[in-house]
Length: 111
Image 1 (spheres, rainbow, N blue to C red):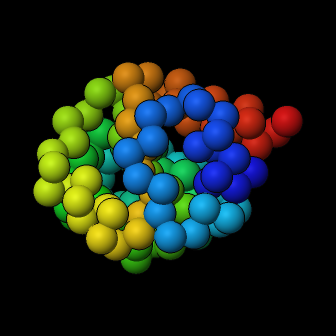
Image 2 (cartoon, one colour):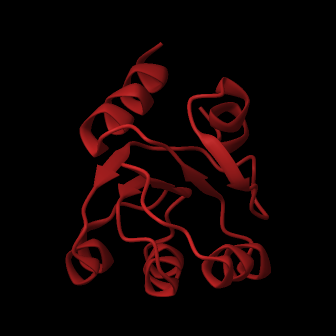
């Protein structure tokens, strides 16, 4: 499944379709501690988190995450959203709990 496929699935609200919609999602990854995510997020992951700030974008870029899903209605400020657009990072939001969001991605990968 690609980032574009995930966007088209309508599971989450798309805030920004980044520069690489053809990027293949390898697996969901759940983590809210940025330092852990920086070292352990696998390349190509769909990172599900409640950390909605500019530092999250930097970590996603360093980890080569395919996209970020901000779960549990995490507040997304205009500055972070604008920065995602500027940096070409795909960003989704959802009211789902982190686990449920990751599970929905996992099910899509498995189908």
